[in-house]
Image 1 (cartoon, one colour):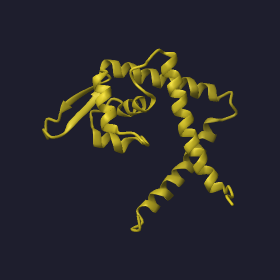
Image 2: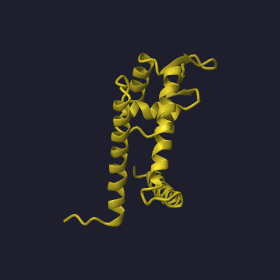
Image 3: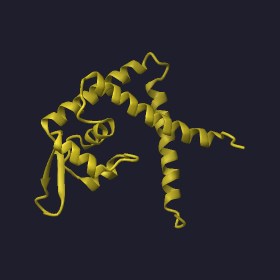
Length: 153
């Protein structure tokens, strides 16, 4: 017998919201006629922002469940969204940054975020409620982080 406790419901909502957001991003890419990058790759690109990062640093910055970051970076380099360069300090390390095409896509995603945020005003979800929700999610994150530090894992 599976009883949906508030804790379990929260886990399910987090998972579902993540999938819904990726669907929203995919729809945005489709509506703009962008076919050479997928939604996961777009979020990886967005998380690079204005920085110059290694793949390891990029992996730590975002959460790309079920995604091979190295493969996705390679595809984004091939499709000219990213520029890949050897590190000046460590020739074994490869750094990536946004190309002009990548910057244009990042700006499009930023515009989408801004548009969605303005639309939230009419969706009975206030700025303060979002801040409170974020505080609660950080508490859950902190709890889960403490659980993964458990030596039994």
